[in-house]
Image (cartoon, one colour):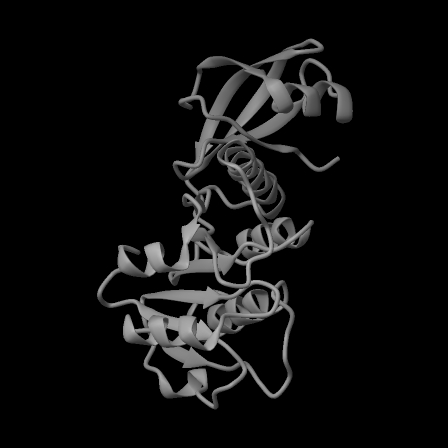
Length: 245
């Protein structure tokens, strides 16, 4: 059986004994039905991963003995920030999950002119926590040892005025009404991709982004859905300048 990878917020060190609870304990004890003596892999998002052995398995808590550290790094050399209009239903979950698997380092949910999702402050907080859990599950599956950062959701205008992106970052706004292609750019160390929700960004929003130093980018002759465009762009960028291909 494949050794399960489990994320924990505990500090990890060889020889330590820790207790896992919540979703991690339920996953180990109920979903996987693991028992004392079996092995898991632990990581806490700080880099590296640890072998661990189950020493007690209960319904709501699991005790483990932390073993050796493996300082493995599966991060791309290309820093990728995805700023994306919030989508309806499960589309946003899919984008967050797959972008994590593809190696993004930052995700910023945006509210734009054409965003149809309306959330109260309480529901938005729940959504952010949910997307964080999507990131955790995706990292457990794809074997990343560092979690992408889910930034606070904000309006596009707020984000453009204070995004805090590195001055050297290549900033790209995706839309199909341009003929600009990636081949014209020199390899950067970091990239930010701005993508609209269903219906895309408005012309005024695209122009505001360009006014803040974003370059227009089309991925080809076909118009892609909001859940397809960022994943295609990330894959191409990782192939050109990252660690895929």
